Image 1 (cartoon, rainbow over the protein chains, first blue to last red):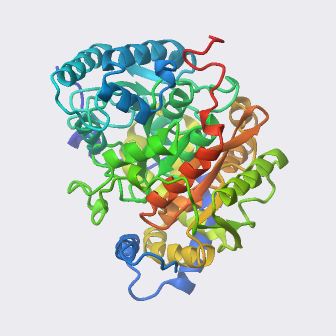
Image 2 (cartoon, each protein chain N blue to C red):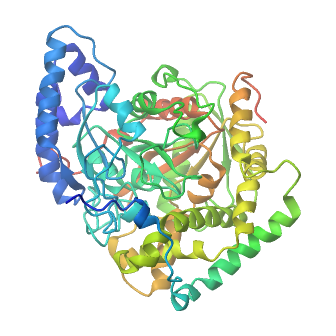
Image 3 (cartoon, rainbow over the protein chains, first blue to last red):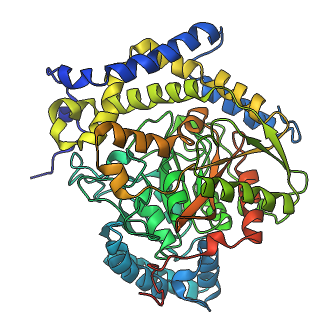
Length: 73
Length: 475
């Protein structure tokens, strides 16, 4: 018999079981702290043009910059 | 010639290419060392002796026929158990993937195969690459070759341990928040976390793909450069590699750093560190000056928010991948590992999108502040001495969390920025290695390797070997 594939469709089927709420609550303080820091920062700093693929834009900018050696900023 | 196992990656590859060493002899020595010293360090998950011997003999036959091999022809390597090879086990140090046989081969292994390297075994790692110390509840804790009671660093613990212990000349690691740099620093080897997207992730068990990087752990910058030349560059199966250059990284090495400017931020990275560690870090700056570099002070943006951005990306992406098993098999995770993933289930989607959308602006601001007048930034990997295994596994959960947070203090924020970072040894504190990080702009790996190579041309920290090393007179 073939071994079960942990990456297969069966394994990926959504579970009807919600994550253990009691256990997750122990992370609440950490998540609240991190979430607040990011939220406040985002409200101040997000601009038009900031996209989920923004890091890849930076990489492409820097790859182009590599053709202009000596430029530091 | 020195002992076979003392040869670095480039030395060994060149010796096999010129016929002064056979691949078969090098492979037998590495297999024996993995089975002996490697297992005593708990660095080995499984070996492939039959395949390794067959491939070694074939490499020797090709050479004897006058066929030119690749740049790593006949060189025995081993890697953390995170990279798929079609038809073979890849368990990621976990109970969840116990018995999993991969249906495809990782892009990095394909590239090392093409360069002629042999893949002779799978090495210890943290469960799903999620611990900076070498902790693994299922495999047991890996050991530091400099002191068996101390952490070897993680998650690429086996890779660093066997390179430091002179068992194989180099190994692949992966780095999401420091998993190449921690073990490189704690074991005293050279590790390079490349620019995110320079080395393809295809066929690698993910932790957080927006942050995951694959890179070399080796005994020198030259050896890391040779491995980078083999593995870096665009792969259509990994969209993040679009625009990634393919280069000869070894060709960029030079002993002279004239014209190079290195920036040193005092805030955050050097606060509250151990005196002996920070003294070794400071002394390394004199070596860079001696090599011709100019060292300047700089400032950096607030790292607390950068660390928060990292935490959102890392935990949400890890939780998305692991949710199928967090729901159905939660007790098959170590509690420490499960507890590091679970926060990702709680963040609102908006936070995750913000963390992605802010990344360019934050990285640009960091580059403008820290590297406005410099080519590289110099910071420690760890501000403290290498922790003992007991310090990071015993005590109250809050104490363990604090010990782990100290390990990642200097590494995780740089991962959010996506920048290339090289870790290299620069001294000892308490009998264990101390290491600096050199941080560059995206795709500045040639500059990082050049600087580390010049440092290593003037120092011998990278050449020291622990008493536990394979082939050591003390064995």
